[in-house]
Length: 279
Image 1: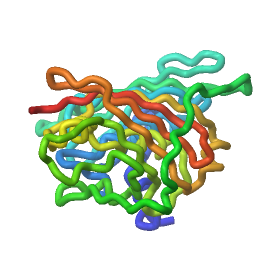
Image 2: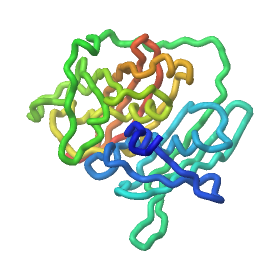
Image 3: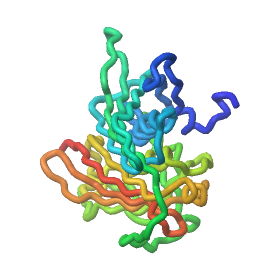
């Protein structure tokens, strides 16, 4: 399969091992997932996760991923360093870094992450959260979020059951909750990489709460995975229901929580992030 025949997501997260350095991979940013000043944060999270998933020492599947956006990623080449720092009987702990060369050619860290993978065993299982009851996706119009400098929303099909992006920026916002049906615009079976990316798919909650388009950007996001390969395969190319809300907005930062559900009502992932915003 040629590179151009790959799904845009798979092109964006593609990594090539660096010869003689088992923890290091080469990659390149994708214009398909570009945000205003750098890549969509979700695709950066997926790229870092890919570094561990491609590693020959990988144990199990993702359990928890925390990504810290230290500085902007610029268009061009980068490297991912994926280091398994501790492996136990059922869990493995990783340090992940995305590096880019500065003007002098010296590699600088732009993004850091920690990852825990695990060997899951069948046990008693229960969810105390319940999937929200919302209008089915086929009865909702597709949202449009793309702009001249924002390409990544074109890669997703999003249909808002509630909390669509404001149509009037007049400061009249009353809440910060959104419920979206979402999936890849070009069909692609769901996996851990795309689930990690979709955990960051919600536009900043401060925009909805204030109905004011202030500058905002994720500082750190943690995603917890409550699923396995078999359950992801059952989802296939179907919709996920995303439910996101802000929790506290204060002195230039706010946190937001999100859930991602399958159409059959299974909770696949939850996420929490802290976001910077300006007046």
